[in-house]
Image 1 (cartoon, rainbow, N blue to C red):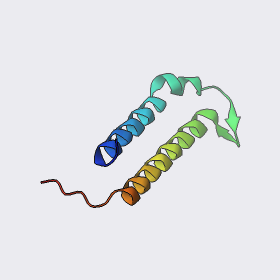
Image 2 (cartoon, rainbow, N blue to C red):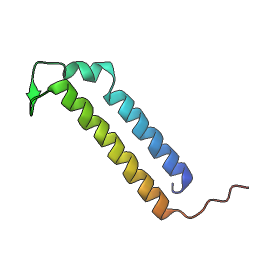
Image 3 (tube, helix red, strand yellow):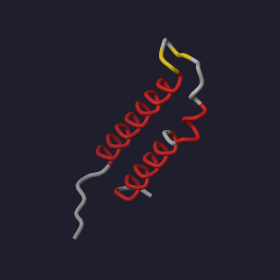
Length: 74
């Protein structure tokens, strides 16, 4: 499937993955006393996950914009 429907489905998938990754069960795995580059492990996980979601959305929007022409919905 290509076009606006595929773009919509992929954006929903990225949203759901982001919500699941930043939800309680996974966050509790990283709430230990560990540190990464001086940051608590939980903060590092949240920022890296947040950055990954932003990058995925940017890549999806760039691919969707370059591959599809104007859509005429009549």
